[in-house]
Length: 264
Image (tube, rainbow, N blue to C red; front, side, top):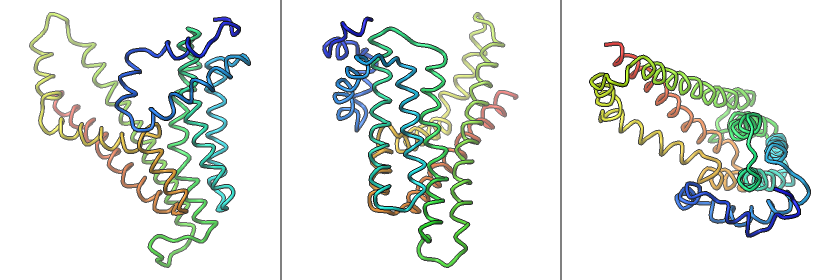
C-alpha cells in the first residue's frame, strides 16, 4: 500500500477477527491497541515497514534492559518509558503488516526474538542492578555476587523451558507424521493418553496461567512496571524465578510424560 493513501480508518479496519477476539481477552491491549493506530499511521507515513518497526522495537527493548542494570532513579523512569514504547511498537509492526500485506521470514524471526530477548535478559539486568545497589533479599547477609548468579540462573531456566518445549513439539510432530490418516485407532489412543488425560489437562491449565502472568503483553508488563517503579528489583527477580521454575518443571514433565506414554 502506498504510504500516501494510508489513513487511520484503513489501519483500524485491518484488525482481523482473530486479533479482535484476542484483544478482548487481554488486560492492557484495550489501552495499547487504540494508541498504536496513531503511532502506526506516523510510522507508515515516514516509510516504516513491518521489519523496520520490529527492529526498532527490538532496539528500544534492548536499551531498556541495559538501563535496567543501573540503580538510578532517572534510569528507572527511562526503563519504564522504554518498556511502554517497546510493547507499543509490538502492536505497530502487526498493524503495518496487516495494512501493507507484507510479511517475511526475517520479520517473523525478529518478532519472535523480541519478547524472548526481554525474558532472557531481564533477570540478568535485575541481578546486576541488585549487585550495584548493594541490595539483598530479605536483608540477609550474603555475597552480592550471588545476585548476578541468581539472575543468570533464572535466564537459563527460561532457555531450558524453550528447549524442552521445542522437543515436546517435535515429538508430537514426529508421532503425527508416523501415523496414517486411515489409522484412526492409533490417533484415538494418542488423544486419550494426552489431550483427555486428567493429569496432563491440569498441568496444561497451570502452564497457561503461569504463561499469562509472565506474558509481557498482558499482566506481566503491569507486574514488571510496578516492581521497577517501587524499586524492588530483587523481589521481581524472585517472582520470575518461581514462575520460570514452574515453567521448566511443566515443560520437562510434559515432554517426559508424552515420551514415556507413547513408547508403551
